[in-house]
Image: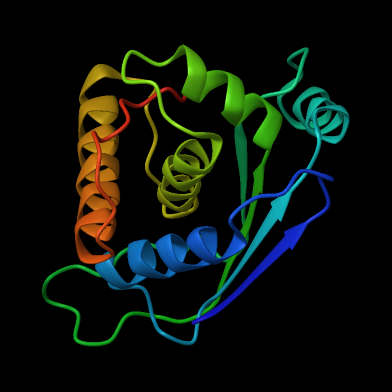
Length: 165
């Protein structure tokens, strides 16, 4: 899997963890190993510009996803998933830091960025949380992926509750 992490934010983030959890999520979702993903970490001003331009909403947000080839997890009957360009995930560490501090189970900015990375991957794969049943499915899958990755990597502590909107 080709995953690029580009930190343009000026904030120090755990790029290795972002890369690793993205790879774990894509593998768990059975995405073709030759697929490509880009993760860009930006500051609040850049995120606010993207949020206004693409969502027509004011202020910065935590994560945005821009799908390319509209890849989806393969069905159980498919032997080989298609490969392609997944798209871009844009993360904002300043918003992630605030969300981690405000969460019921307070956690670090990097832990929030890990959660947001998985959230972004799921959006690229067509998951959404507009309707209650969609939200339950997406957030359940998101928690399972984050918990699975943390368990395999010996990360301790409580799982952060989903703070993404």
